[in-house]
Length: 516
Image (cartoon, rainbow, N blue to C red; front, side, top):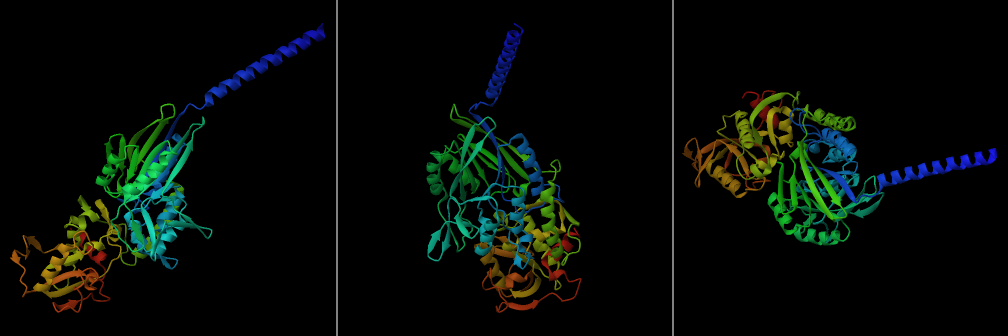
């Protein structure tokens, strides 16, 4: 009887334990059951030319972005980071040499690899650099490149752009499906395409129609995606028109303009952050499989001093900053000295400087004229030499002038006939939208006439003009060269004269701004 009782008791305990285990398994199973709902986060940047912070390091910088993204991933493990074009150029450091070659975006790829960027679209400025250097940057990258409406011209044939990995060419995709899965097993297939504006024609790139190319990709992506999004580098007008034509696209993350913008067209959201990672957009995409419906909620987050700096990214940035500082100090000993305070932002955006006089361009022209050793009456420089494609505001550092004019160059005092001066200014007016358009001071256009000091320019008179040496090479204005009969004399900087700031236009601007 004792044996039977013990046997019965032991069996009862096993039964109860088994019941508890079954109950616990059921509880766990219920907790992890696929609920058909998933959320992912996308961090969007666009038009990033600087790896470090701006305004004395107070805003922007990829170390801030990296720190913020790591915190975002803790809240939303299913996340990705994207960049909507324009990051290899322009930049001051890109003009420097390192290990025998021009840097040309190598620093940017290095930092973006470090912060675990996922995917980029091509911007128009990616094609500023030579084809060989662009290929190096693509090969060095650990992130995806989308090239929906782009082809690489090789002789008389066209091919997709490619990334070379271990000696093998892998064509860049025109679109891609990114797959996510949360802890309870809910999956999301996110179809992504790109579009790039045709604003930088170069011999090795064929721009196809972005809308028609994206339409083809969208048709294919619909079959294998739950949600469709675009990563574009177009004007805001083009993005809005695209959104109207393709209501099936939930989100368009754009670039090209440098100011944040968020608009809704039907059910499609169009978002652009501020340039140079002054801000980023965070998009939360939610999808419900039972309803086959997705929603997008977005937040603009400013990358200011409230955001910490990632240690690993900071180390990579410091490496490249040291290379840059060493080069700048050859011209100006204190690159991080505050030289000026801009009450109004100085506009160096190409959409301004290549179409009309900007406050930055006029200030630079005044600096050039002020540096003259021969009482120049007029000063000008070509807009193409202003490469910052951004605004400078608040405290302006010496290094900011180098960022704005990375190619430097000397200033010449040039005495010329009024007839040549008129020809130059007329050519400038015809060059709107191009680098040959001039930023100037000492001149005023009234109707069809050009005026100086209240008087119409006299073709027979002589005028002293201070200009950058680049203009006398005839590259932007073909007839403006040292052999032109309209040039009466050229006065170049005095070698070895430390007080002659004409030896470097950036030094001349810095010294002038310090006097204001």
